[in-house]
Image (tube, rainbow, N blue to C red; front, top):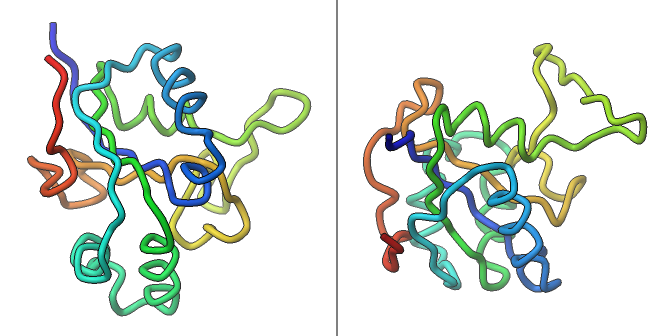
Length: 147
């Protein structure tokens, strides 16, 4: 039975630090199936279009600059309830092993507004998430696919 799909991006700092393999192994160990992946260096135009939902926010320019600072690795992952499962998989654990709550009461996961504070974590953009308003295709990111 096929699960739902979501998009995650291994950001330029983590990719440049050669952490992509460990991140992918972690996600596969959590039960995700890699459906598509691509190493790319986003252009300013691509990053601006992809993150246009944040265009009016104060961190937009910094976000676009960061995401175009080096190669990144967008990946389409599949798993039952992929959006919620990805949030759990990339939670930053406290030393005790418990999850740190964010101000909305959920677990803390990589968010665009916290890029400089929490480097070397995957960046998630949820394709089919009701919260994101996005559905369907990862656009230019899923050029290479694995069946």
